[in-house]
Length: 368
Length: 173
Image 1 (cartoon, chains in turn yellow, cyan):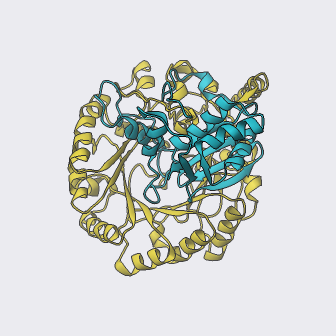
Image 2 (image 1 turned 45 degrees about the horizontal axis):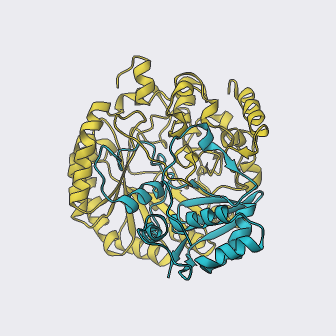
Image 3 (image 1 turned 90 degrees about the vertical axis):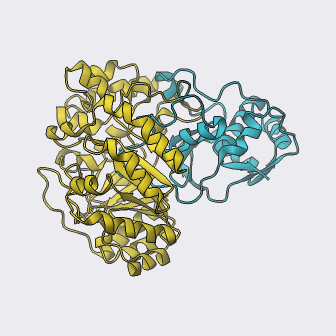
């Protein structure tokens, strides 16, 4: 991890010299991202479940997952996000939802919604599921090309209608890519017809390999499309949240007093960690193929042991003041979701440049 | 009586914005909230010309990948905060506020974590103490009395309360 220790020493020194601290250090995570399976009907090229140099993880049994949920509940972790892969492919999902709901973990799932049927939905709602994030990446042709699943769109839209009618709150998550950005307004209009009320463009994070950088939407195209996306959402009364790579021109965040900039920063190790299907824990899902970032196994270790693993603590204390290079000298760094996974996985420097950022790319002479 | 806030926004976000008072006065700060900033701005100002505030073109207003839950239920609207923060009139001393019933609190080494769905707030020990005094139901006029009685700066106490209302953790009844 290069100069990790030196940076931590610098941070500690700075913290000690002030009557304040940079970020309140929690005693346990606020949100846990739990990948309960890596099985999935989609084959998205950007999916973090499909990363190089990673062995297929064995899946925990129902009892083992319940044991982990019990540990999280005991530590008063408020939120657990059951994801994958496709969590619906686990037949015990209703049991996991029910246990989470009853133990105060506020469960939510991230799903393709493809393997859902009415019976499954009823079981999930009965178990306490009242919200879900559904991945849809464009209108029919675009979505099916991105996820590598011909004929899936119609099923997804039918299932979506069923979910909305059942009263489950849905957020559509669409990864903003070169391939789909211009088609997002069309998608929004189609989603409005089935009653969706919340749409979100996720910033594309090319977190694992350099070839993934090719799918970053060009900055000018993003800037052209943002007003069109806004208009489509406004026309249909859909609430919108947009995320694109830092450096989009004209984007300016007005930070409300009382909101710490860390709320806009990478939460890895600060307020969250990620559990893999076999119980291994990393600061974030984008480090799962980096053994040196493993912080323990939640089945074997306690929440406290994992949360206070020195590797996790490095992330907890990492601030923009630790960045090097272009990110280090960027005037926007104090209010920026600078993806440290991109810096680490693509440049081998946790404190280095986020080369998916338009500002960094421009300075490096890369395509923006 | 609650006075109108001079500004809703941090003027300049730099290294100082990352500092947080652990002690000295009651503090409450949001440390995780993918939507709260956008929602407050929208609730407070509605649609502004795009050259003033670009509500949606904010690459930093979300966390990536699967980090966030969709709002679990109809979120607390900070609209009521207008009465405190942006009203043309005033908030009367006998205006009563109640704590939202969906808050979770977790004791921390240096204070308290308050979570409301997917939004998290950190409160330092002084803030946790004042919060306990305020309780589930309070009249605006009582806050000044509580602060005086317990040696808390009235200004700091009211600012703390203002934040509770801005973020929708308390709302008027």
